Every structure is written in C-alpha cells, then in structure tokens.
Image 1: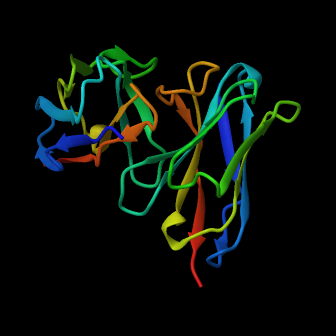
Image 2: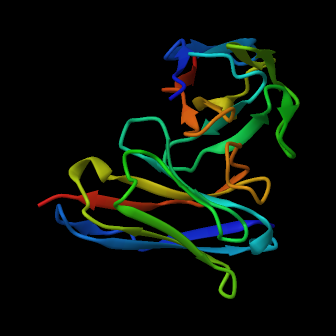
Length: 122
Length: 107
C-alpha cells in the first residue's frame, strides 16, 4: 500500500526558511514523479512543484519559483521542499503527492500524504 | 494559466439523490480533467481521472463525463459518506490548476 508521510511544518517568521520532508513507502520511489501541493485555509488546492522520477527535471509554480527548491533522495525514498524567503501568503497545509508516471509534467495526483502545516507569521 | 470554474459552490441533497457537479475550463483541455473528494481535516482523494476513468477502489456510483471545456461529476445515489468537498483539476498543461470546490451536504 502506498504511504506518504510529510513532516517539517512549523510556525516561521516572514523571510524565514523551512524544509519539508515526505517519506514514501509501498512503491518503487524512483519510478514515479512526485509533487508538492498546498492548500490555504478555506481555499482549493494549489500545485507548488514537481520533480521527475530521476530527479533530473523540476517544475515550479510561478508564485514560488526562485524561492522554493524541490529535491528527492532515492536512497532514502524521501521527497523534500526547501522553502526560503517565506511570505504570509505561503501559509497553508502542504501535501506530498504521487504522480502516476515518472515524468513530472501535467498529470493527476493518485496518492496524497496527510499534510504538514506551514504558518508564516510574525 | 487555465482557470477552472465549478458550479454550484455548494449543494444540499438527500440520501439516494442523483447529484451533478459541473466544471468548466477556460480553454480546451480535451479530456485531461480529474476529480477529487476531500473530507474535513483530510487530504484530497482521487476519484476520477482523464474525465471518466474511475480510480481503483472508488465506488461505482461516482462517474465522470465531458470533453473540451465542460465536464461533470455525477454521484448516482448519494450516500451519507459522500458528504465532502469536490474539486476538479486540469492536467492538460502546467501549471496544474484546480477548481474552487463544491461542498456537498446531506439533508
């Protein structure tokens, strides 16, 4: 059974940094692209970033490009999101999600973790 | 970016009712349209992908249809456990975008 477990969410001041992790199990991690999707309180989900199965291709939403970095470690079956220069509008639940193939381009999300909460506030 | 618009934003229906939710894309997306169910405090769950394919384990009372710009999610016979918010999402192009959601309540 596919299982995704996020961690690393916290309260951080504007301008601060945070690294999120997502531990994956139940599937061959390196064979699938992975994504981060966030959801602000009371809003719909928003795609943030994706990375191909090989890790060689990364994709970002315009709102986070240049501030966030997605990466993966296949030796640990773990996905990461390094978030720098955080803003109040980055406050959201951040979900790790699995893509149905290895590419990381437009696709659906076939499995989601339970999320980790990031709050940006002074 | 492709904008996704859902209607209605909320609805209330009785157990056993047929419920239909619509989603409209701001440009043609062929059949690259997916549907998710989200219950309070939980992550979204994939129900339907590429407009009409039922995700494994999802009850057959859920179905999807449409192509181009207009899509529908139908719940054939509403059950109490279907109380949730439903989101559409386009997978035609990046960035992948979601609708604003439709909240389904049980009368």
